[in-house]
Amino acid sequence: MGAGGPRRGEGPPDGGWGWVVLGACFVVTGFAYGFPKAVSVFFRALMRDFGAGYSDTAWVSSIMLAMLYGTGPVSSILVTRFGCRPVMLAGGLLASA
Image 1 (cartoon, helix red, strand yellow):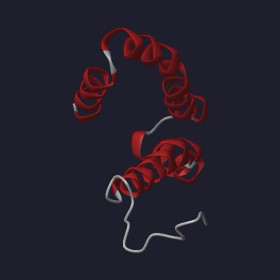
Image 2: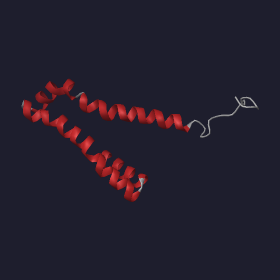
Image 3: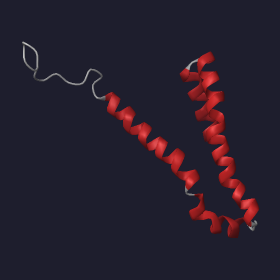
Image 4: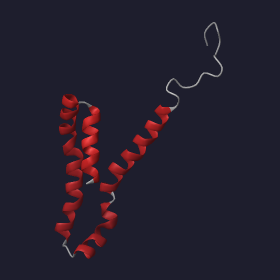
């Protein structure tokens, strides 16, 4: 508290949009890291539904985690070169295809 005291009625500088971004990042990160780790819950169902063996089904989580962690350096290079928005747009289009 400075000489003028606290100011009343002053809201967040961005109107609260930062909290929306924080919440969205929390949800996206939860899904991105939670689903590959939860494949073991669906492991037997995947084996049964696809008629695959244990070793074939184990590749599902391995490929998901390899894509999750392996695309980070590539994304970083693309963001540095082209900027954040085009890379996010391309990633969103790839994810929705």
